[in-house]
Image: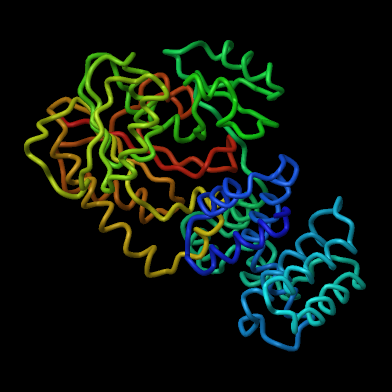
Length: 439
């Protein structure tokens, strides 16, 4: 199966099954095992079409007498792949972009639409392969330009400003940076960097966060020796910073209530020097299994995984020195990694803060006097972030804001007890971190 067919199959499967982008594409790539160049091209097409769907569909509508919504899924997806290549990938020969998109339709048993697909793409080609946008400035034009739904743009404009909303939407285009967390129990950042460089990976040490590397030209990171030997894990620097904000120390008892896939648990266990007890919970057995597998690869023995509902108090667990509460959230801060998140409905977004507050209040029961509680999301939403943290403090006077420890203060600032991270400053994933102490 070639790259275009892989991307086409993945996009159709996502649309039909409402599945996660990374899991969908990874599964097909594993099935087909294409050469590296085909794998990279398939990934570029797949994620490019997902993040540019609104732009692509608007431009399809300018050349089609039929409404985009009325087109068969197979036909619309082939057109999106064709237009994306023509408008965004200068290295792809235009005749191939057109003809191969037509072939996708033919092979999907929509042969009768082949002429229509060919006509739309050739008309776009004659007009210079440039995207068109609505003439009137405003939210609709910005939505078409950036591929970001108006609902999210409205929320970001209200939470921050129209200018920041536009900047955030543009920051969600293109592939995000790839960061690794070095496992200090298996080697130094310098040793990990040298091992990666031997296999042709370009490496840059993070200027602020310890044991953090930015990498380029990695190929499959899971095949790199440093990964296989448990020296590194894939983890954005915002997520690493969140785990460092907990301030885990050797010998402590720590709970991570919404832990899967476990990256923050791993950082905390490493900061504990694998000495103490770290209880990592998730609601689903399969996801709890992912934590266990990751801990084994990294050689971490202090982590005990279990299935548990973060919203339900379990008195038998006892108290902890520190509790991390990284709650289920909208994920608006990681749209550049999972483009499908942009299609969450207003109802889905509005239902989250009450659930998040209930989980945070439950987490508070596990914190011993003098202990630390950290609340975090990968959302860029004041309702999910400052709104939940503020409501919690108002209802729980036994807790108060607590400055983050030095390892996190290097990035967040001395005396900082809460922060919103964005791609606009420091190229972080969108993240919110709030740290409290139980008096």
